[in-house]
Image: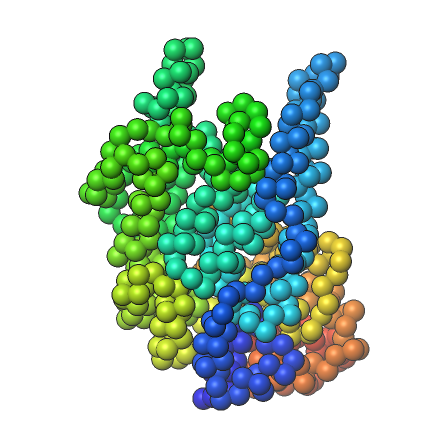
Length: 460
């Protein structure tokens, strides 16, 4: 059983077993996972561009006068190209740093948790501004809080420029605010944007079963009016460019009721108080517990385990390490090996880890994500990437993995002993049929392909 625990710890809770990792885990896999939760989460290199730096550069581009000789449409396209020139190098640098961390980390359970929360608070690079800021949000708002309190994580994310700009909260202006009254006198119609308020309730906290109404959506949107970013021109004038900035003139005055609780007028702190209450709401506990158990254990989360994890979250006031420890402590989390089908990112990370592959400086490695159907930070909606097998195990998706594995194996087959790797990567989950197929392969490339496309390697 201890050998099976090692495989589950490395491949389900972590991002895949590196050479020698299963032997090190041995009979204390659960203790090793608990040890990973000690201290702060590992950070990425300081050299990566901050959201403030990127937005300052972008604002400088937007401030450049357009060439009046150009057609208006051409001018817009030219500005978008310049903005992409600012954002895309930062996007690539962030993804490569993220990939390196996933491949070499000795705390891959924590890396998986970072990826889990990044997907929970999803932004998508379909929107140009997010192209540069998605990686920064993960570095600046998620990594520092993934081993802390959920309330701190929630506030850091909702006040991050990536989330505010993705869901247009910088455009949300209270109907009775000072800014709205001035605009009304000038004949301009501006008002509330409910995007962020809706997603905080539906996706980030209480969930669709959280017994909130459309009135609550509007109330929360009202409570966070004025949550914006600093800038140097137009509506964004004021504050430090690229940093969170509370615009008092945009904020709706007066008391507001959310989920039956009245929040007295209080400017910025009004919204902060509401989010802190949402963070420890019992419906939030159940929503987050369900997502965690689905991600780590099974597509259909065992009800008893969901309740146990939710109870720990509630009793600890949203302490995330305590919540993770509750998950690890349950026998239900260890009973069914290979119960989860790997997403494309999971599949790639576990292959890179198991083969101890270096991460290239260029973009070659990043193309694999797109080829397999999971481009980094592009889920297409605030709901994030799906987390059930049926969303990833279709025949076309499996063929893409086979083609990728064949190309990689042709390059590496003669350099790798697939039989030895099978044991190193899969441990006690390695089945007899896969073992025989790898042993009987015509050559090293075919053997490695069979390993990478085996049912055991496709699952975690």
